[in-house]
Length: 407
Image 1 (spheres, one colour):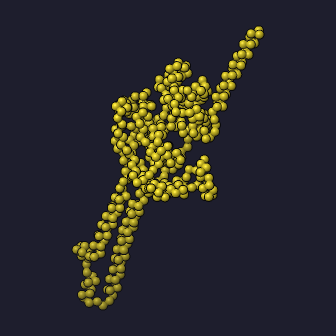
Image 2 (spheres, rainbow, N blue to C red):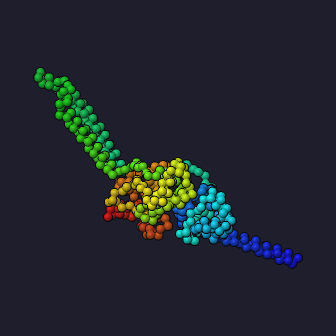
Image 3 (cartoon, rainbow, N blue to C red):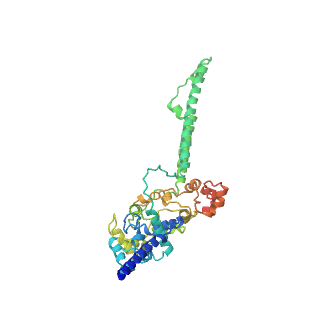
């Protein structure tokens, strides 16, 4: 009897220990907004290519992973080196491996414990969000602030032609009135013949007024054509060159929702967004050997580039003149600007094209109309007080100074 009570007590203690352990897993995950925001950034950059929070993609859905996994330490070990854990014979690791179609997860050895915990915090926060009813939002596209001068020129030219026509009508009325007035006078036969001389095509063509009108129209149209031509110098809007590998952003960024910064790693930390190296491509394509649209042909070109140690000669789509300085991290990381703001609906493009004008006028218009991202940034607290806590535009902090982009 004593032995049975001892055994029952032991089982209760074990069960209590398990419950406390599971509870501690959940408590280890922070609910701090800053940690969740950091986790969202890390999730989008590292995990989103293969995982979703609430649905299976290449890997399993991550909602509730803190409860399904053996422990938090197990999650950290799996994230950093899943292949090692699988090779060790770990039961749960092999189960995940089998359910994922035997596709090995990329090893994220550079992620610290705090970074992994922030990802878990973001996943938990997303999983706990109530379902939102989809609503149709009004289109909020921003206009491109360029192309205005040619529009003004068109309006001016049309206005001048209207004015010219009105002047001709008024001149005709004046001539008609003068004829009626002179008819009431006692004119000689010679003068009356001059007043009522008929208009012929030859006389009209040879008249000073007609020659002036023709010269004016030709000069105006030529001037507008020259100005329009000058405004298009260096503008490559719509440029969509053929690339050495038929890579589809519509498949990667659209269908699979791979975050732009997963491939273009420099966008958040440097001046250039940089073209991804073949090694980044092979993070996924070591396992995925057949493309959605092109089969195995195009992926084989990436493998060949790695095996022969030859760079892929991608053709640059977006070109700024050397005299202009642009920093991606300043806009993406600090300003919080979405890639689509400048690059358009990249997730819908099979072949990438230059969507925006990327001219100086276009940039200036954006700086004049875009609200400054001051949320959570103590650097701007004093400025906000000076502006009575009203929203500031980029131009308010020197966004229109020449030396910002030309120095």
